[in-house]
Image 1 (cartoon, rainbow, N blue to C red):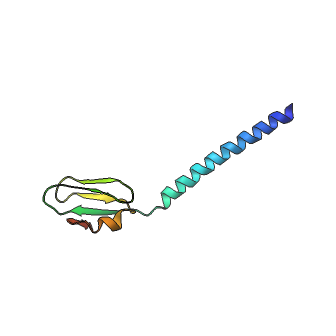
Image 2 (cartoon, rainbow, N blue to C red):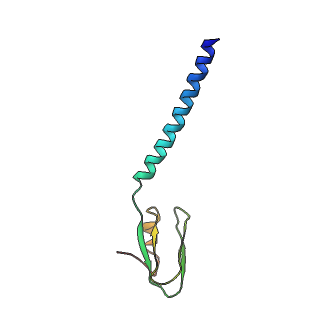
Amino acid sequence: MNMCCGRQQGLESNRFSQVSTGATIAAEKRQTLPAGARFEYIGKTALTVVGPVTGKRYRFRWPGECLEIDVRDRSWIAFVPHLRRAT
């Protein structure tokens, strides 16, 4: 009887260690992603751009507004008229 309970505890312990390992790996991936870039809108009204990779909507509400663009969308956003990389 004790042997059975010991096995269950061992299995539960493995299950929890795998979950925490998965969470740790996800946290490490988030930390290693390169930072995005800031882009400034130089048009006259407002502009909404949808990132082709992330699907994220970038809403520039007025001329001069700067937004952080996800690194995965950055190369595409660089070709959108009236947007320029902010310094």
